[in-house]
Every structure is written in structure tokens, then in C-alpha cells.
Length: 361
Image 1 (cartoon, rainbow, N blue to C red):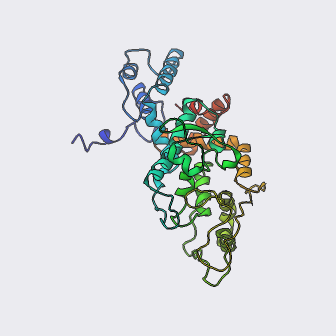
Image 2: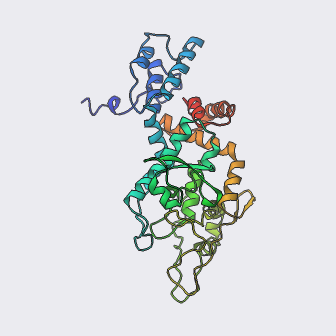
Image 3: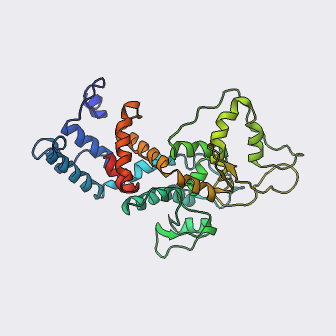
């Protein structure tokens, strides 16, 4: 009966119909499961059970809460949050879901897949530990890589084993999360890149906006016929998006994914798109586009600069993802004021990652 009790399986916080302040015990439990993915430790339990000042209410209790948040953020157990949240936020469970075709991508192996999956997590860990600004998620002159990733990206190997911070140059065509092999690969199908999937992922992960599902009766994009002229996936999508039932959504989604057309299905840089069927040479890649608000870009580098101009929007979306993770539920209109307050607090320190997590906690 213990194992089947809802109190054993779920964190219970009073009646769902009532809106009221959390008790000290509920606050300690929520805080601990948010940051440590486990029950409160003895020191936090002492506060929650009334053996110390308590966690909520007056100024003394607020100081106690801040003390415990800072203590927990500096504890090794915070790595559980870093691992779990980054994988959930970036949908890293999808890496390797569609194994790349070995004939098309002979460089892809199990070690590379594992390394690709860990790169965004280690990048997030570095961002958190050094309390770096959220802009580095969008573009950076560094990444965290091991020897396998350095070989894959064409970077100098790190001087030590394991994942290390590696400097990037413009000609490396990397920087931030969006040009990592994991992100570019999880939005592909194992044989080719999928710009629409990349656009949907970016809309969800970076802007926290889930596009509507496509109509059920939309025809799939057909491959180039054997006797036809080779054309890019972009050209086939543009013809597909002329369908009146598709145009509105594609206008908002496609530019976000097409900006990264110079990366293939496993995230390798290329200037020409390999088209397996058709006549003629492989066509040049066109990664230009226009943002939904009308701002143009010529490639992923310019696209990322436009995202940096939208720092406040991106930061709010990141905070919304964090709040969803912390509360273990989707946000509602009733949460808007609390999210606004967190955004205002985080903006005071230029949206630095550890400070954002502290503000949410």
C-alpha cells in the first residue's frame, strides 16, 4: 500500500483548487527536488520542521531561504539539476533516435553520438558554474569538447583528456548551442537534414512557442526524380509551403531552420547539399532568410546576431522553461506575475545563468 500511495509517488501540496502560500515543508521539498532532484537534506529539514527560523514569511525567514538557495547552488548535488534540466530543455533524448546512414555519414559512430549528446550538457554546466550571460547560449567563441568532438569539428584537440573548454574562431562555424552537432542531428532523420524540424525545435527551445501541428492531409515532400535537376530541400520546401493551408505556419517556422542549412544531418559544415538523385552537380546551399518580423539574414552567423538582439525574449523563454521544470507542470496565466518578477530580477544582473536559477528558486 505504501508503494501505491499517491503521497509516495507525487509531491502533494494541498488541495489543487485553493491558491495559498506553501508551508515550510512544501517549500523545502519543492526547492530540493528542483535543485537536487531529491528530498531535503538534514539542514533544510531542520528549517522546514520548525527547528530554526523557517523558510517563508518575515525578513528573518527570507534570509534563511536565500542562505539555503545559495548553499544548494554551490553543492555538488546541483549537477543533478544541470544534467536533468539541460537534457529536458534541449530535448537531448532525441539524439540518436534516427541513427545516421553509415554509407552517407561514415564519420558517425557510437563515441561521436555519446560525445555529441554530452556537449550541450557540459556547455550548460560551464555556463552555470561561471555564471555566464545567457547570450552565450546563442553565440559564443568557445565550447566544451573532448578529443572526438574536436576531430569531428576540425578543432585543435584539448591538452587534457575528457571535456575541456576549447576556443573557437569564426572559420570554425561553431558557437553557442544552435550549431552543436547534437542540436543539428536531433532535428534530422538519419539521411538528410530537416529545416522544418529545426525551425520547430528552435521555436520550442529558444522561444518557448510550440507551433500548431500540420494539417493531416498535407502531402509529404517528394524526393528529386532520377531524371530531374538536382535541387535543395529548401527549394522543395518553398514549393510545398505555397499550399494555402501551410503558408502561415511555414512563414514563422522555416526561416528558423533554413538559417542552418549549411549543416548536414549530423551537423557537419558544408557549402553544397548532397542530393542522392537527379541530374547535375550538387547545388550550393542558401542559408539566407527573413525573420517573421521582417529582419533579413544571409547565414547562421547573421541569424544568431538577430537572436542576440532578442535577448530579453529569449531570456524570458528560458525562465519559463525553468519554471516549468521547477513546478513540474505547464505554466498558466496565473503564473504570469511571478514570471514577470523573476524576469525583472534576472535582468538586474544581465540574465546570467546562475542568477536566473537563483531568482527562480
